[in-house]
Amino acid sequence: MQDDQALHEQGASSSKIESVKTEVLKTVAYTLLRQVYGVTEPQKPDIKQGINFYDEVRRFEVNLIKQALFHTNGKQSAAASLLNLNATTLHSKIRFYGIEMPTFLESTEVVPEVLSHQERG
Image (cartoon, rainbow, N blue to C red; front, side, top):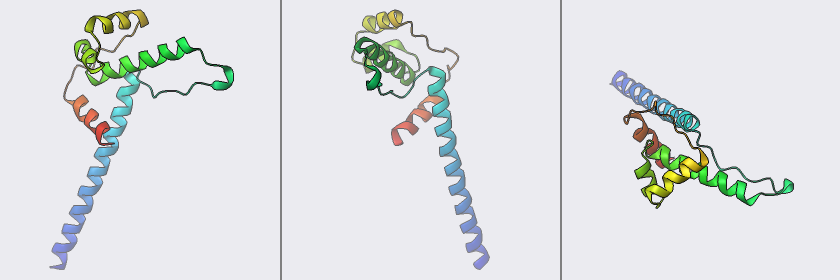
């Protein structure tokens, strides 16, 4: 009986370790994907050096568009819908800002899992 309990506890511990490893790997994968796509965390402006309103608006818009494209796996119509923009407006902003997204991440198997991790986190 005691051996069975010890094996059960060891199995539960091993399962918990695997679960933690999986979460860590998902976090790392999500971080890497964001870096590959050029999506960065918002930066606070340096007030001491002054703030250029137009540069800040540009930085904000570019980052927001990249995030929308990242979350929609590069699909512009879905990103436009997410941003509540007309697809033509989004397309013109992408061209105006020269936003380029990598096209090598075609698999839809990894991204939804990684994105669902972000929603939990």
